[in-house]
Image 1 (tube, rainbow, N blue to C red):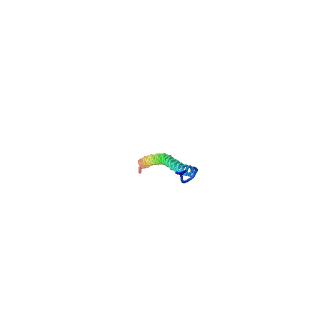
Image 2 (image 1 turned 90 degrees about the vertical axis):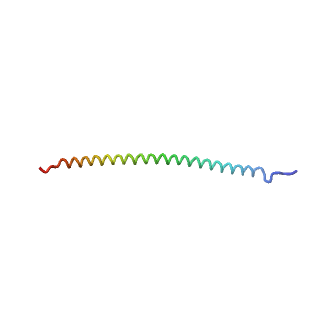
Image 3 (image 1 turned 120 degrees about the vertical axis):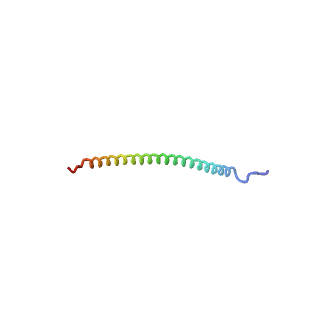
Amino acid sequence: MKKCCFFPWWVYACIIGIIFCAYKLMTTAKEEQEIDQSFIEKEGEIFIERMEQERERRRQDQQVKRSQDTAAHEDHSIA
């Protein structure tokens, strides 16, 4: 009787299990990377929105200050 298999069946089962685990590891890592990237993009958009709001608030504060300074200069009279 000739055997075509060099190793017992459980060795092949272990090899298949290792290959399957490696495949699942790679697919899960890719999914997590995509989730992380979308989270980073979302947080970045929120940060940029807050920066723009702060910039707009500062512009408005400067405009109010300029108008107050202009009004203060107009109120001064020498006579």
